[in-house]
Length: 362
Image 1 (tube, one colour):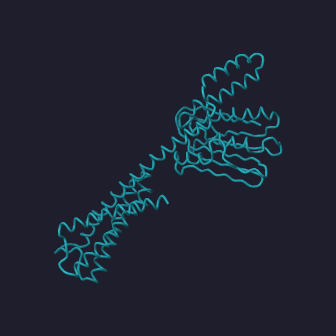
Image 2 (cartoon, rainbow, N blue to C red):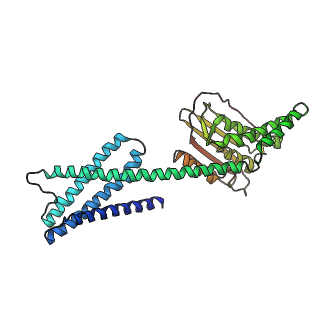
Image 3 (cartoon, rainbow, N blue to C red):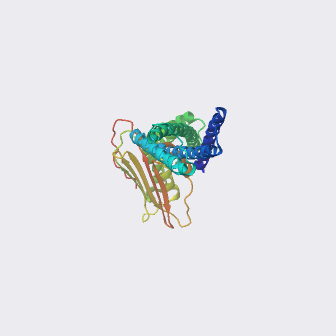
């Protein structure tokens, strides 16, 4: 629907340009001298506009996305020359072969001139006009689309933060209060003090670290571990979720609050308290291919259906589309007993390597 609307708008732009050109022709008094040449002129005009429109949309729909957007300028240059030759050949066949047999008149005729050379020069000019026009309009469309996507991303990120911080009224007061409890319990109840410390880490992460679009993988994984820790405490010896981290971290970054969506879905909606039905969370950090993969597998109750959790499945997909276009992969699979989620997305490279060892939580 979006592409269809864009094409219709481009057709309207071309119609306006053609109308202005025809008005200019009339004002300049370029009219035929006989009925036959007048009819021939109108037919030639139609064939020219048809050829021009074809070149315009071939460039707009095929060459610009494939070469200009991908910054393959050399390939685009050869494609332009090929397009010009096609334009010249089509016009020559229509105007100097087919229409010449019908009307007995040439479109271009200069004494002693090479008509093929004239068509090549003329076609180069009009191909250049069609190409420049379609490139400018295409880039304007893409700029406008990118601006809207960035606006949507900002709104989505704000929504993610609001969803994660529903109870955030005065974080400084909350942290100070929890810190007081931590100090008071550190000697007498060290385990409880440790729980308070991890809770502070969770709150501090969603309060401060997620204020930007990206966070380091190391911080995101640390957040995941603290999150899972509380489920482990809740279920004690009946928590059967295995978290496997594969690979090294070199300060790569990922969108904030993306990974927790998958972990939350496993811990809140999957079967995690049965030893014979363990859940698995695998995070692969592939620095060679510059991508991060998340795979989760967990059993579910027969009546359990996957639904939005955390900041929402649809919100996740929209954020990834805005950030990475089609350079990510996200899918969910579910049968009567098991649910599986998969995400693959690019890593944002910063610098400096820090090691992240394998960690297993069972």
